[in-house]
Length: 622
Ligand code: ADP
Image (cartoon, rainbow, N blue to C red; front, side, top):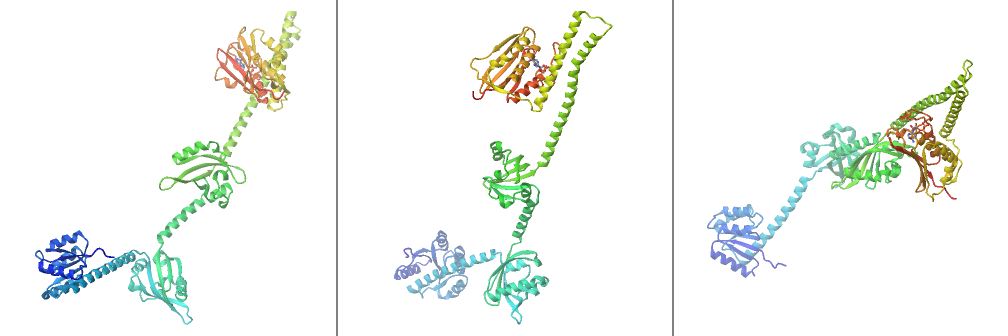
């Protein structure tokens, strides 16, 4: 298998000796490649190039003499075997060199081919074996030195009944010394109870455990807090021979502390009243603390692995989840109010803080949410809002009563005044005057009737008791039904009606929608100058018919627009100062349309006019 012959470096300045050796090797069938150097410096260069299996070294060279030659070569390449070539009178030097690490020495003049080759081979082999041994020794030493486990070899002591009562330390290692903090000489040959007199209590337990190991040969392993040295250890014990045991100690104090820390933190998480929930990237629950159990009513084992969205029946912000998710993945955090449900179906309001969890390379691995229950707070807020509404309603009611009394009193006062005037005996009224008074009384009575009928409508609408008699009608039929009222209302205006020919019928109460239309036209006439145009326009928009009444009157100030549909709302009449209505008309219109599932709205520009529109659903069926 050796097609490559070992390289031998011959360091010899005597050409005769060189030739002799070359010949001897040739005689043996040239088992080595021979390289020659006639000076130490040349020899060292060869060595530095590497690949030399053996140095045949003459100690007397031109640039180095005696033992020093060996020292320098050996120092340069301690792993390369050296065989010295000495003369008989220098044999002592050869012996000394062997003591210092040379493999062998050969005496010039006593050499033959066999001896030379054998000495060379032997030196190479022996050096190789030594190297291997050294390497493995080194390996084991470093292994041993780096081993953190202490070691004690002990003999168990038994009483007359063969019951273990103590043990003696026979051997311990350096780590044991370090771990336990006692010197070998204070331990070896001593009994356990002597070495640790303070641990009487647990000593018996320990002795019986080791006793069992030593007497039965069963291995064991246990964790123990070793009080005298305040350390946690894992001890594994086995028996190499009956009656003896070896205990291997591992210091696990750090690990125990870390575990303690984790347990402490876990305990903390368990005991806060907030829900702390962790989930994986798919929002499946990984952990669910006690706080979450109390808050949601689900036990941890009921929810692990399930989707957090399903378990908490997230209602909000479920509808805008995409937006929330986008922010969450962008910033790694989301905080906000959520509306969820407990196990029993009741609503839970919570303030959630959710953090994205990432692994060391930055990839999301899940999230942890801390949810704080704010249901009670929300309910209190809700109650406060309801109270506020009630207060407002109460205020409105008083205002309504005041308004009604006022509205009723005005015409009544007027009627009463004229009637009293007519009844006066001390005054004479012409026929014309009497007619005038009676006309006013008539008008005021009408006004009273109108107010009372408006109030009745209003209260029916409020009580949701407005009965509708709905049917399919063409818009033109509705217009026809109120045409005479419209004509008289717009006597002094130009009424224009635009109805496209193919409008579908609407499904309405004819009388009530007629009332709305009349009311709007009446307002249009009331709040626009004589002679101006009033337009009724209808058009189809999807499944709705839109009817609008436009005037070219005073218009409504933008800030008042939202209030015109309020009950009793009447703008201070700008131009005329007259206040002929009740302020109920538009709110009744709105009520009527709401009961028709329709809508009423207004667009207006001050000084240009107003456009009131309402929508009606297209009729169903025929
Ligand atoms: P009123 O009986 O006073 O007309 P409404 O409820 O019908 O009561 O109207 C409420 C208020 O809305 C009116 O007092 C008036 O100020 C304003 N308003 C209604 N219609 C018009 C309109 N076409 N142009 C200008 N103002 C209007």
